[in-house]
Amino acid sequence: MSALLIFGLLFGLMLTGMPISISLGLTVLAFLFTMTQVPIESVGLKLFSGLDNFGIMAIPFFILAGSFLTRGGVARRMIHFTTSLVGHWPGGLGLAGVTACALFAAICGSSVATVAAIGSIILPAMVQQGFPKRFGAGVITTSGALGILVPPSIILVLYGVSTNTSIGTLFMAGIVPGVILALMLASVTWFIAWRNNYPRLPRASWAERLRALHDGIWGLMLVVIVLGGIYSGIFTPTEAAAVAAVYSFVITVFVYRELKLSEVPKVLLNAANLSAMLLYIITNAVLFSFLMTHEQIPQAMAAWIVEQHFSVWVFLLVVNIILLLAGNVMDPSSILLIMAPILFPLAVNLGVNPIHLGILMVVNMEVGLCHPPVGLNLYVGSGIAKMGISEITIAVLPWLFAMLIFLVMITYIPEISLWLPKTLGVLR
Amino acid sequence: MESLTAGGFSSSPGARETYVFLRILDRLEEILIASLMAAATLIIFVAVVQRFAVGVPLLYPLVYNINLTWAQELCIYMFIWMAKFGAAYGVRTGIHVGVDVLINMLDQIWRKRVVLFALFCGALFTAIVGTMGAKFVIELYPTDQVSPDMEIPSWLVYLCIPLGSYLMCFRFLQVAWAYYWTDKLPHHDQAHVEGVEEFDRHAAGPHAGGAR
Image (tube, rainbow over all chains, first blue to last red; front, side):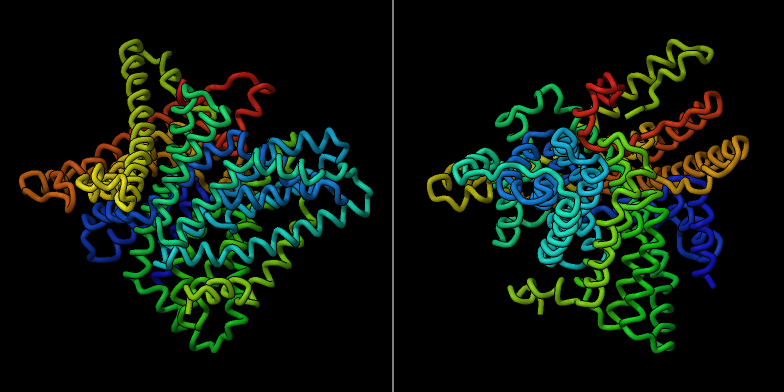
């Protein structure tokens, strides 16, 4: 009953178009004030203590690192490197785009930043080479989604923080699925390009490849620093993110000189703006999950599910449907912050591994990013390619279909996500 | 990024002083959050480097007596302050995302009513939170409670809740006021998040960013 009331109020407020953070907060205040004896003052304290966690602080750091990295230099050299490796295959630049997105995703935690960084450089080049615009836009918009699956990932940090799961393990679990998805997207690209006989590039010599590797080494080193640093135990994920932010500042401003020192305050301000928005949703989502726990809603749902004798199979199907539907109205961080604390206890109850659930949620978010009405990747892609939303929606269909197949694989083959952490002994 | 600045107010009566005050407020807000972002990053970076240097025999004598255990705490507090003031700045730049599927289907008059209602809800929520925060800070003020590592008075740490929330409340009212008169909402162009501006600038000409 109270669950119905809470969600009814929440959706009612959301539909007025107010910020999701505000509708979460108001729902909590209204409910606590009218229906319970909880002292409202404790809510005020939660607004501070909800953020009092060093793990969360990885988010602003990764956003800042992303803001520096999207300034061109690193992405351009990565594209140059991947082009020298795969450019001579059918769909040359397209394949290079997928690979570059996967590499860039390994230093950047956001899908939108990945699409922006790689897309703004490779799309004009593809059009110039004689690829149809649609093809290029489709490849980059969907491959950019790798940004939140391949570690580091802001969405995985959010999941880790809101469910108390190890961020390091989550990052590790994202590697194999990331590689598989990149391969699947690349196969679609290859197939379409081969069927339509799209242009190829001349094969690069090994000397050229080495030179491209040498040029791009500063950016590629970041992969080693972030992932190597976390797994060798030198840094926590948050410290790795801070080091990545400083490192990307240094290479963009001093090594590649893509950014003037006088432009840095603007980058800082933009990163702060975006981070504050996310942190504000987090604070209010913490309030909301406090209300959920207080009203024992996840427990009630868990009891109900056990009563219905739902199998894991059906449960995961329902989870996917709910998440895909939510992806039609909300952005990934909000969905994750609202749903993770609810789904987590249910999943654990049914014996679903929390790490598996995390990766599954992220893949769902990826699909949501690539279709209208709220898919941010689409909007970024359409901004870069100067294409209308409906046109780009059709353009991404082949890759989106591959992504859905991938989602089914991730859902029903937990080993894809769990194999690497298990083999390395981080997960029992 | 299109942002609502004090400019929208220049035509209202009694203008000049209000205008200057608002411009200063805008600038302070921007400087504060950008500096907090930079400072927090540097502090954690220095702490990591110091810990690393302690492990290197040659550098050990130089760094072993620097104590940076407070770095994490300071970083968290800086980011919380940044989050509270940045959220207010975000209202002005329109970055807070909402669900706009329904309101886009409404006709002009109803759309305006619903949007104004949503903005007032925002103002209401932040006002309540600000007041709760203020009460909390006032209760803490006479106590000698301090933060665990740095031993800063707790009331000072928590001061960001009332200050940030009231500022955010003010921003919501400001946006509502401007929307009522001009039908314009600040809109954060999401396709331009993080740096595509660089690419687009040549096509679209210089745009009004946050920091000028």
